Amino acid sequence: MDRPLIVGAGLSGAVVARILAEGGIASVVVDARDHIAGNCHTSIDDASGIMVHRYGPHIFHTDDEIVWDFVNTHARFVPYVNRVKATVQGQVYAMPINLHTINQFFGETMNPAQAEAFIRAKATLLDDPANFEEQAMAMVGREIYEGFFAGYTRKQWGVDPTSLPGSILKRLPLRFTYDDNYFNHRFQGMPEDGYTAMVASILDHDLIEVRLGETFEGQQPRPDAHVFYSGPLDQYFDYCAGQLGYRTLDFEELRSDDDYQGVAVMNYCDQDVPWTRITDHKYFSPWRLNQTSGSVVYREYARAWTPGDTRYYPIRLVDDKKRLNDYVELAEAAQGVTFLGRLGTYRYLDMDKTIAEAMVAGQGALSAFRRGDSPQSSYVSLSA
Ligand code: UDP
Image 1 (tube, rainbow, N blue to C red):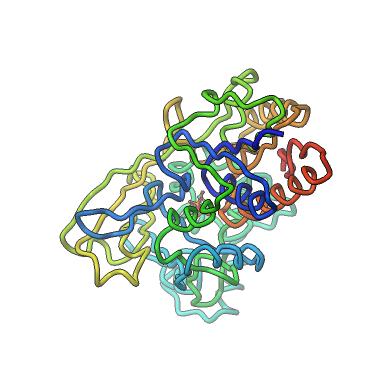
Image 2 (cartoon, rainbow, N blue to C red):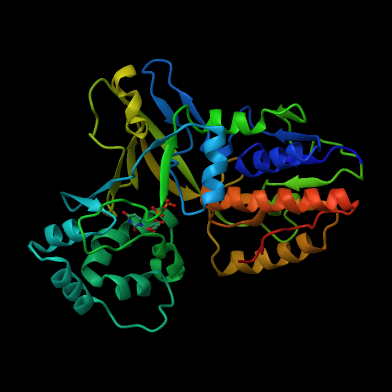
């Protein structure tokens, strides 16, 4: 058997390569980009010393102890709590929606029980919210929906919230306490030396060869070499069922000698502000503040992906789902290839889920190789 070929040096590819390597199987990892770590790539800005999240902010959070242990063996994690602010109609609020947000927005001084009753009275009772807007109406009612979610979501996704799934909103907590932690997970932190260093550590093994600047299409693996593919699913099949829709992001970089906004992330929820959020990267590594100067700031704009752009968010609207089903059938019938990761399975995956699934894929493949079998074409339900 020739060495397996792993396409993509992001989290999925790196984790699979590591698991194979620890099981004694050598692999080659290729990535079309000139760096590892995919969209969680970080690097130090020379002028300011600031650790920049080149493809937008990535904050590690998980409930999965196995994943947390794994990342902690490859990086020293510094506790970090994501506390986001949101500007709405000239006022700054705390996100996600919590007791402070509610009291400030409605000019009240309610306690938790009062606020909960107050919001419940505003929420529309719906058994089964059919879309993002209905989900928001059922969770928080019209005022908060219009203030915090409608404009931001239109900018982020480029469609009306009535055509988006409610599951997107369910990512966010709603709290009737003053806890303004953006996530509910048990473990949360940032790798001290950045995600690129963490992925470099995962890939650092004698049985792993990494080749950057090389595309999958440019490879000529032997037919018996298994492929783990974390590139775009539709591209693998030459777009034969059409293009799957993505949102891409443009980052307008601003530099300031001063403290630009005093916080890592400021969301802009009003529709007439063209960007969705502004991030000041020095605050993603607060333990480095004494080694940096000024601010490196990204204004973030979302738009439809076109060929040549970086893919960020799978859209998964009705047409995309139809196309996805076609690709899922092709993927499940494909021999000698395992599809995984955000692009390989066309799903909105957080980093911890990506790692967890890649661990399962790697371990499954290892067992199959040891039995002399071929690994499955997919380890996760592609259509989930
Ligand atoms: N969202 C919003 N206003 C905000 C923050 C989030 O309307 O201030 C909506 C938006 O549709 C977004 C979704 O909630 O896509 C999920 O937010 P999350 O922060 O999880 O998005 P991420 O950028 O991490 O994918």
